[in-house]
Length: 88
Image 1 (cartoon, rainbow, N blue to C red):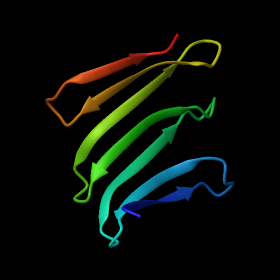
Image 2 (image 1 turned 90 degrees about the vertical axis):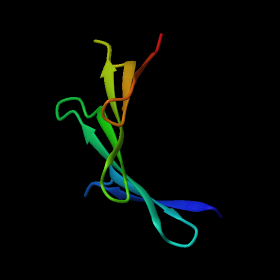
Image 3 (image 1 turned 135 degrees about the horizontal axis):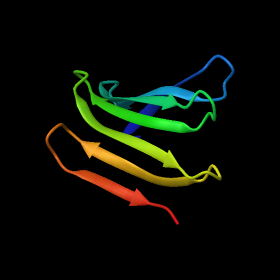
């Protein structure tokens, strides 16, 4: 095993609130936070931070009116490029 992830769920065990990724030796590698839309329950953002809580990237998810994932926008560290992924 090279690394492992610990997931923290909401009280109803419906959604993952955050993840922490660790090396095999137990050193934290990164933290991931999830944010959900209150009305739909869909994932809205995923923020990844390094061990010093610095932003590594942020992914914003958008859905079409039928509730299907339409696209996501990934922004790397501040000042770096943004990437879009569109789903058909």
